[in-house]
Image (cartoon, rainbow, N blue to C red; front, side, top):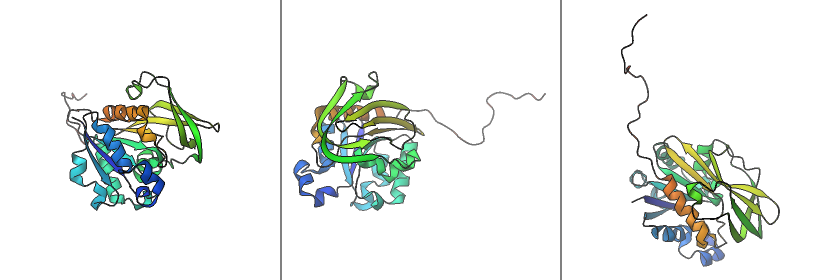
Length: 240
């Protein structure tokens, strides 16, 4: 069974009535709810818990970590960011959602500003599948239509993705690389764009399917021992 931790800063839910109406159990609660349908072992963690809910024990027992943040990126401890990064490099999967593009952990792993254009105008988003054979796109069809979403537009200041799975088009004309995968160390990273806090995006069946697929894709790969540093020869080296 894949062990999943859904992390959410959980600040909008405390201060914004509209967000509470859309996500009464918090964004983390909504995501955890549909992930449990997949028979994952799911737990949640939030910013204001001790160690942000991401203790060494929690991360040790997490195969895939989902990350949603927006207004409180700077409140995340650098120590915890390093802890999460080390776990990703050691094989834990990481799925970064929506405004998590500006999180410390995503920017650390990408090495760029991760900046972009944005606009809130209740506009339609069409997410095109540009890699139809990719496991994250399984069962999605050609595209996902979302009736109202926040716009993110290019240029998105990220490294070229290892794989580009989705590209979004918005009613106002912009496009955006909205589904990007990376390998970092032994771990896998998936960035998925939709999920503004005032819209019911995480109740969308196909959005849920992408995230479920992402968890399956990002789960750790069982590897043999990997050694670094000075190494003894496997064969006899004959002096010339």
